[in-house]
Length: 214
Image 1 (cartoon, rainbow, N blue to C red):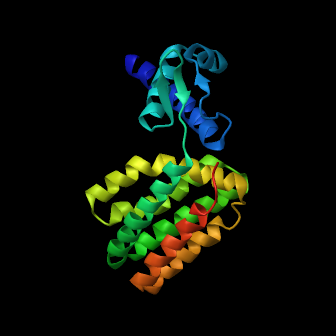
Image 2: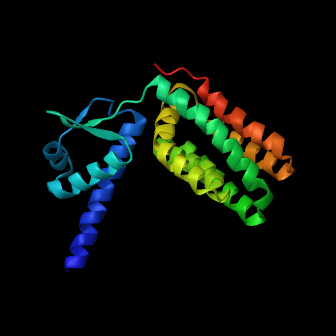
């Protein structure tokens, strides 16, 4: 029984975490908004413990921060942070793609194509959080596959901020070309010209970087 109670509590906490992450990513919760444990627990009609667990997970991802006299608030993301991250991402993702390409197998391409199929479904359902998670899985694949732990650590550290920026960009621009864009990246990988693939990935990122964020 105690194990079942723990599993139930963990499941509830995950539901709260997922809903709040979705609200932050999609902009329903804005930077600076306070997150009051008692209020959230009331909205979900649950105890405070799973809410605190959910907030701790969000804090670890950098989506919320603690502020004196305010408690937990949604963190801010500035234009400079976005620019700095995308400069870094162009450097390390180009490296990750370059290092990964000679290692790619048919199974890898099937995996990437599967992500894009799921992305297509998420776009049709207008599920922004799912779209972004799949986008991060697609690009994150190369950070994992390049077999460089330092590069992977950098990616894991910045990917939540990348997701937040992508969400802002996707609110300003349609996601309808997202699937085609990622299929084009797979095709250029299959063509086998490393320099061209690296440049196409960088241009793919720059198309988002050029979007101004206030």
